[in-house]
Image (tube, rainbow, N blue to C red):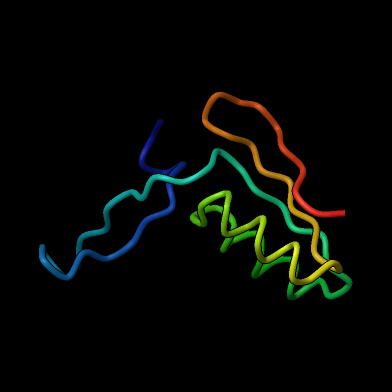
Length: 79
């Protein structure tokens, strides 16, 4: 995986200008009536654990998630 394909975050314990890749899913999409919410949720789902995505979708039935795991399997979470 190339660094340009990664979600990056600042690490305050290191050089403040540097960015380090985070581990997450290969891809994630959210379906929601609001486009802005779909965009924000898709970004969040990239880093959230599957159990937390499942809980969020269970508590908010208007949200559906599609997540591509590192083994390239696609899972649907929600309605």
